[in-house]
Length: 332
Image 1 (cartoon, rainbow, N blue to C red):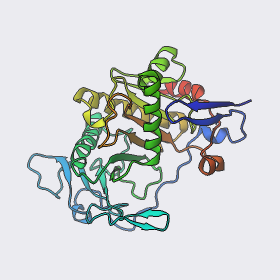
Image 2 (image 1 turned 30 degrees about the vertical axis):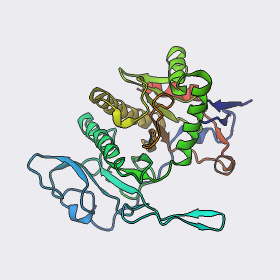
Image 3 (image 1 turned 90 degrees about the vertical axis):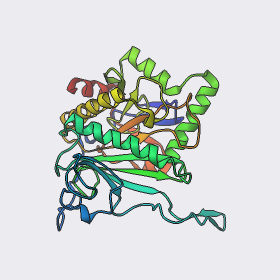
Image 4 (image 1 turned 135 degrees about the horizontal axis):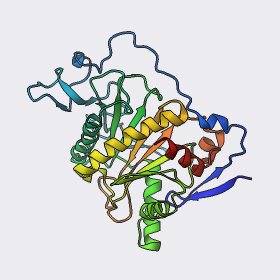
């Protein structure tokens, strides 16, 4: 018989059921490579004119903006979900609320090399990517219209039109539901226990080691107790911190090396590195210094989510996190 498990942060119940017939599908990655481009890659060096003007970049000291010689480059997305120009024009439509899609949607071009994944990038290059995330977070929060930041990385061939290594940074005028759910749960947990929920989870998993995958000087990787998806993992700083933008230099270096190892491990265990990585960090305009804990969620592209997951937000996971943690730990 399976188990019902509740996530203490999001107050979300999941079903862990290793006897499901779709279990085998949960033990491998299903990924589709992007279709071949009909022309030159707009993200490759020498094609800088094919993207909007850059916002930020790391590169050779003598390099000029929007020219080759960059190591990491940030531009507005080629097909942005939201735009920075204009105003909200908030208006009602019967019982509904409508406003213009104001926000920032930036693309981080992570390397001049077209085919490299995070598993293959030098650690120094991954550190530059993480540092760009930090700098963009600090800059975008200066715009008073924005309330929250999301960073999303589709790794390897996971649901991306462009195969050139890149990730997305979005600054939004609202707090997305998934983050709002976590913030609410953390506030309630702290009100009851005067402790950070994530810190409690980290302490328990470091002692029990049942779902701990790996640990470094500054971070721990866990398979969450109430995992929604097979091989879902959380990467959390050992030091309590609510805001990713406050990460220190030593932590950045440590995190870069850990992410490289994690991507290599996913490839070994699941046969493909395809996964989505999402940064969860505190909103710009709210103080969650004591009750929230920033983290990265890594979601491998395994079996598709059954209808209960999307229809009723009831997730069914055929791979117990204890089993997933053991397999991942052996491959690290």
